[in-house]
Image (cartoon, rainbow, N blue to C red):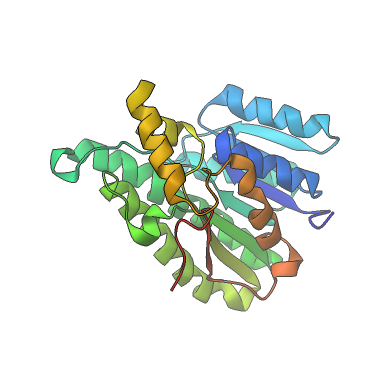
Length: 254
């Protein structure tokens, strides 16, 4: 188990990709702090981790509030002593043309998708620096790499996560802290379901999306954790500031 003896904080770990990541890290030997705004979801995933014989705690938190994030990190440190791995899995989107969007929506999109990443990094990094190392993996989106219609502010926020992660990677490399980004493509989550809509119209959009993906399917939450677990491990000790897409080939770096 490549993460034996490590402690991971999974922000947004109560469902979808976050749940899959939390379980994968636990299977690799990590103790897990599962943080989510929905208490029941965090507790359910924590229970699943305990059921495989690994230590876990659930924490209800609003990641858009810095004071709440600081309190969470303090309590996780009190429970486990250190945080070796931070994974930011939180996300939210509303699909609409930019010219029809409103500032209240922008603020929510930026708070959940970007500012929360600032808060968790600011809270965790001092402890990683004093401890002499750590791994941060931020889940962004291919929308942040290449843009995506009707997701202008979401794509902007996810692009900001990429730029922030690269910059922090440069700043903290001297402390043996690795910071990398994973960008899922279209993945079967509530966000995608909301985009597709219901009924025949939604199915047509889904079918067109599948045709555009070289591997001829959308991603599943379980497609993401493998690369996250690798980047969180000592095997990736010389990899930092990188952006890796998990999209079935829909987007490819030039």
